[in-house]
Image (tube, rainbow, N blue to C red; front, side, top):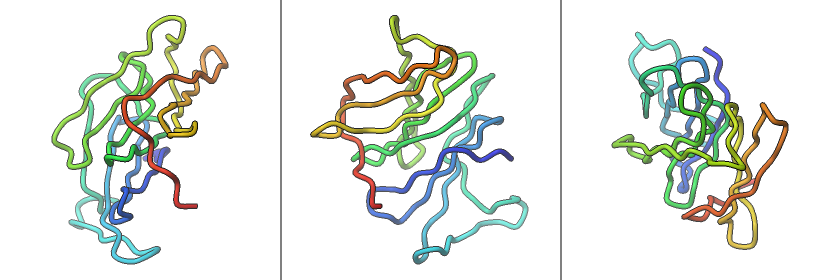
Length: 142
């Protein structure tokens, strides 16, 4: 329900989708271009759960970094960016401090000459900010 952000793993073998209202990121293996491997029929969409956050945190759009970490804009009790390990083994949460604090972080993308600048949309204040990122973002395929 309410898929929003979508990303592709560095090797193109997995697709990630952020589901907004339940704060989950799902993943599917890519069998071939345009074809995904689905799982148990009990799941409406057949994906595997990569991460689900406790409490009231909603996921919005995302980007993937060069190491395959899924970086998801997060709204709710802990606004910021949630960085999920590509194997789902854990996550960390980056809170944007003043002057970039905003309750509605809604998108992230990478740019700059070395892709180490994260551009983050702050929708409550109507701003886009640029912050230094610890790892390069993944260069887009298209």
